[in-house]
Length: 343
Image (cartoon, rainbow, N blue to C red; front, side, top):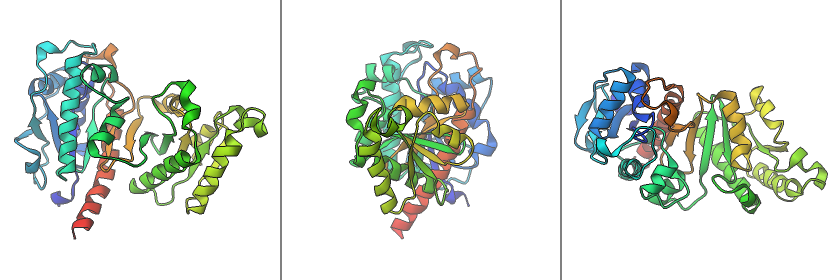
């Protein structure tokens, strides 16, 4: 029975933030841990510090490699020790190169295991982009780093999820003035298709997906902009032709009311804050980011490293618990598909 559980790689996140204590609180939940064959990857001193801050002692079983994890009968999480950063290099609540380099090293090790089919999903605690760039990140964000490391050539984007609602976006971590450059029929079709298929992988048989407009009042028939007429509407028509009953565009200032009322499973937005503001207002401490378009499920809490409360033991575990559950669900589907490929 244990062989059916997905192998879940879990990381401690930015060593100067709330990640280590969140992981301690997460792994103290037996109901969550039972959903996967968990392997925690990180520096032993940092894991010990996370437990100390959380006021918990969590038993883990040491392993020497990822290859030892699959098929374990024990419910106890495995711990794969790394040596990426020393305690004296980390200063609480500070974005530093040493912490960023540590995060990159651990994530890269987990992705290498994914490429070797030794793990089925990755869930990482919050990280800090500034620290990662100081530590050697060459891309605009972690998603682009993942895509490069995993050899992704197709469309990919972040999904933000809150309970039953998912959002994707056409553009992400770019200046607002550059957003119009990203609007195209192809990108909208790709973003909507990706979230539609990902929801199906997450157990939603017939996802209800809508597309947001770009301009005020959906362009007001062209008087406030023509992107809806020239780009978004043709993209929606193309999606329907391809067998996905996507609807829209709907005005961005009202589309989330439909979501709030339970009429939608997903919204495709045109830029970062168009969806993020609404999602975070609806449930900041619950949201999850799913790295969409990658060959393996990767999730994380939608909130950040919360430097302002790091080390105090008060961090809310709900978002990373939600991220873990989604990764388990998608990892199980990924594992089943891999087994089918090998049959």
